[in-house]
Image (cartoon, rainbow, N blue to C red; front, side, top):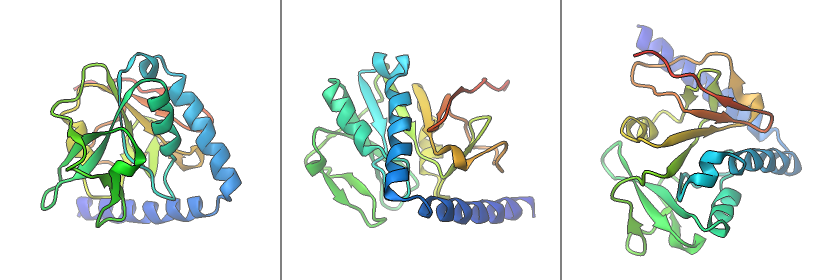
Length: 199
């Protein structure tokens, strides 16, 4: 019963945050995205990283296209995910240009695997930009309900950075036993370092 209630609450929250994001004008969203970008690229973890793992943003998501282009200009490698058909897993591939992406069945831009190099293992000096419709103050995220990132993050050893609009932050979100918080939370208004929970 509790699990069903959590799922229902997450579904309701997703619709709420989607509606909220649709209310931004293009100019407002551009300003919010620019503020997030400045905070991400101002991190010493970003400066020290030689590789940036990031999703490729869709219309309602916090923009990562600018981040990808900035990472390239800063001499960093960029790896983006591809969902593996028939599983809840994803693999990351290195890209060197936006023309190496194609629209997937989910409507997401994903790497063309025949043109890209597979990231066999996440480099030690890497950071992972994590998407979310919402995050809470303890670093837990409200994703899209598919579980791809939850599975990936359970194995990833680098620094995780959740990016989100400040309007979409909540004090506490419903969470499951396998949910894992990010290390850093960045919005258009603030940066929050997440305290590690005791096991």
